[in-house]
Length: 238
Image 1 (tube, one colour):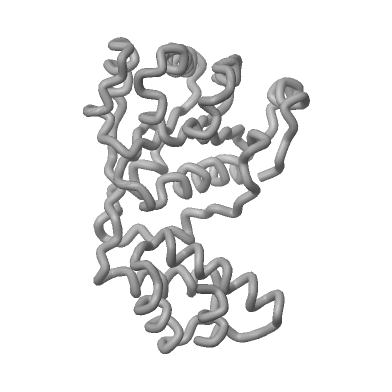
Image 2 (cartoon, helix red, strand yellow):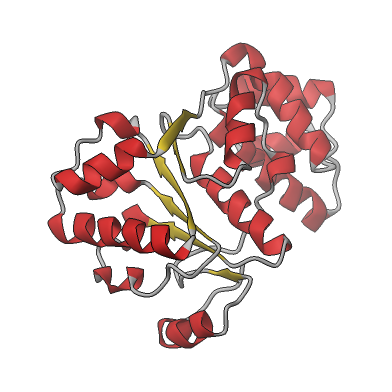
């Protein structure tokens, strides 16, 4: 992702770039091939790559943001326009950021449940959904709550969201964490020995979100210092 300034935002939309990001978005290399779906999320993997609108929902720190960013990157690689919006972050701004963006190929909006009860944002989201239906733009949302139980104040929006197919993102069980980190490290060509992997699982927070964050820091530090990932290096990071 490339960062853009607010002043250049409108003109860049007119030029139909492969992918748009807002100034607060961080560059990322999110990729489906580096996400551990496991058996519990195979349906999710199928649904997210289809062409229908979808709401992916589940508890926090299950990788919903990563999946939306991966989907934007996936579309961009196919020379299609994509836009990622972290709604919980941007809802302090004006709703005009939703104006005239429905001509994208796909828009991924994170945390739609974060605007529940905020009338101006509920109306803006409702209008975006309607405009996207007319333009053919695909919408993919994430939510911590099941879309059927968000209960937006705007009844029309609530009805619209309930009609969108919802698919749950299941958390990785403790028993599968080691398998997940092992597979992810292999996919990213990160050399992590069995002893180091066991130490990492034993002495850090047992969540995939936290473990991947540590894995990324280890990889960066290993490259920067030209050192293998060892237990002493892990201790420096955690």
